[in-house]
Length: 172
Image (cartoon, rainbow, N blue to C red; front, side):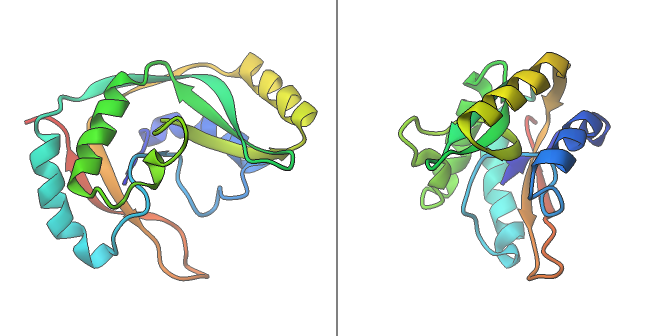
């Protein structure tokens, strides 16, 4: 379950991802809310359950502002764009997680759930810092109103590109 920015905001994100993200072909730009998830044959039923939760949450605006990183050990890093504020994303993620509490990988880290939009991988701390600083100096913040959550799925290779299977609207 992910949040997907509107396609008109994709060009600057995808320009970075084409250069630095080995998963650019497989994934659309997104913020993961729930992982792992259920097989697509359960999406329609799950969408109904999520709708009950999502109707109580009004659409909200987020701004993708700062570049940050995760350190995976052995000099491996993931660069990502951080939303300006985490509060509405944290509240939405908690509400969604309560529907599927066993799908808790996004909450299992030391800091818990960290809303982020991944833009690439890099090896070496100095290389990561240089790339992060360079990209941050050119980054123009992107703002969008989150109005829906998306249940996504993929087929087996070679057709393993993620696609939206169901959309669940926020608010009433």
